Image (tube, rainbow, N blue to C red; front, side, top):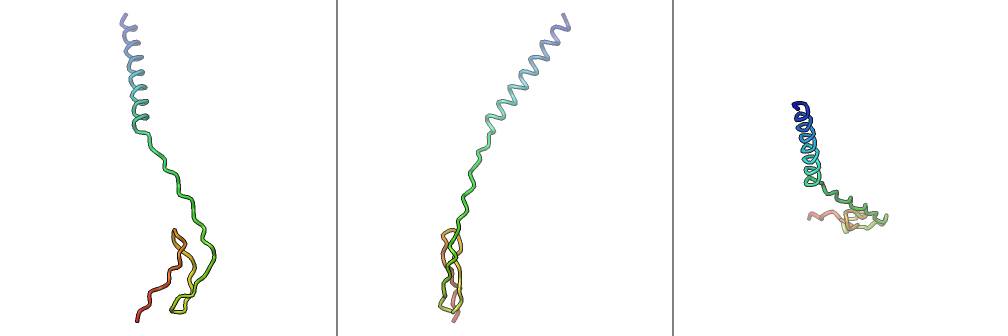
Amino acid sequence: MHTKNSLIAIVILLLLTGVGCVAKDSNGAQTITPEPEPIACTMDAKQCPDGTYVGRTGPNCEFVCPEINQ
């Protein structure tokens, strides 16, 4: 009788451990955010007022001329 009670206790302990692991995984599920797609800018060039040339840069593919210090 003692062996039967021990076996039942072990089975219940294993079941509770399994239920606990499943509950932890379902509550702690991580949301995977998709990577933003890379942006490809055209290879245009622009002559800035100071005489330098710049290409398109940044997420909006804008021309960024250097500031003119007078």
